[in-house]
Length: 434
Image 1 (cartoon, rainbow, N blue to C red):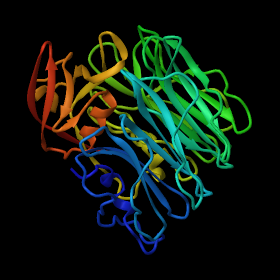
Image 2: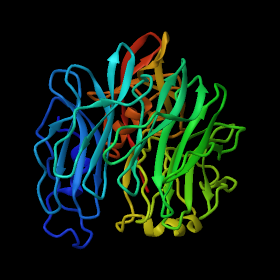
Image 3: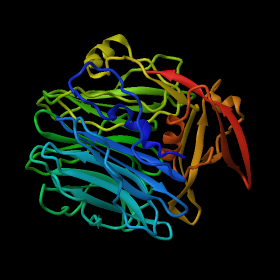
C-alpha cells in the first residue's frame, strides 16, 4: 500500500505561493508505494518549509524514514533514520525556526523492550545517526515533542524505572545532547498515557498526561520556564472516576487549556476541561463540555497561531462543544470549519502479554458505545483487536490511527481475539463531524 503519511501531508504538496488563499491543494505522493507503513508526523516552520516522518517496510521490520520539502518546492527522496533489522515505531518530528529538525521514535532492543531514539538534521545538513535517549527501555508507546525559543527541544515519553512506570522528559539544546531524564510522575504499575507538550507566549513549557495508580486514571499537568526546572505535577481532573486521553492547547498570552474524557461512573464518557489563566500557576476546576446524554471519545482542543500543540485521535463518538466554549477557540480552527472522521465507538486500552506488561499485542475493548459501529458489528468488552484490514494493531494508539485513516461510513474487517479464538468481524464505520 502507499504509505499513509500521504494523507497527513496532502495539503503540503508543492506550492508556488505559500501566502495564497487557504485552499486545499491536490494530494501528492511523498514516497513510493511499499508493502506496509505507519502514518507518522509532519511539521512546518514559519517560512513554509516542511519535514515529514513515517515508518515503512518491504518484507522486513518497519523502519523510520523522513522527507523534507522547501517552501514552494517538492518533496525530497525519503531518507532512512532508524537502523535496519529491528522494528521502529511511532515517529514524531518537530521543525525549529532555524531549520533544525528533530525526530524521535521507539525501536525494539530485545524481546518486548524498546528504546526511545532520536535523530537531528541541522539546517541544510543531513540527519545524524540515531542515538538512544538516557534511561531504561520501555514499551513502544507514544512520545511528545515541542520546540522552544532558542531552538531547544523537549521530549516527553513513558519509560520504566525500577520495574515501575514514569512519565519522563528530556531537553536538548540546538547543538547539545539530551539531558538526564526528569520524571514528572513515577511509581505507576501501568504505562502513562498520551503525553502532550506545548509552549505558550510567555515561553512556559506545559506537559499533560494521564496516569494510573492501579485503581484510577487521572490527568496531570506540570510546567517549566525556559531556563528553569519542572514544577511538581498537579492533578487537574476529578479523582473519583477515570479521566483519560488528555489534549492540550496554549495561547500567546500564556493561557492554557487541557481537555480529557471522564467516566461518569455509570454509562457515559464526559468531555471535561480545565484552564490555567495567563500569568497564573493554578488550574480551574473541571468544567463539563459535552451535552448530557452523549458519550464522547478522543476529546481534542485546538491552539491558536501563538501556541504549539500536538495532534490527537478519536475512535469513539464525537461531541459538540457548547457555543461559549467554541467562541473561545473559534479563531483556532481551520477556516473550512468542519472535518468528518470515521468512528468505531469503543473505548480501548493496550492489551499486553500476560507475562510482560510492556508488550503490546492489540487493543483491548474496555467498553462499547450503544448504537455504534462496534455494537452493530457485535464487538464486546474484552475483545482484543489485532488488525484493521491488513494493518496490524498492537496498541490502542494504533487502533486510533487505523480508524482515523479509514473512510467514514466505509466497511472494514477487524481481526479480533475473543477468548482463545480469533475471528474476522466486518463493521460499517460511523462518522462524526468536528
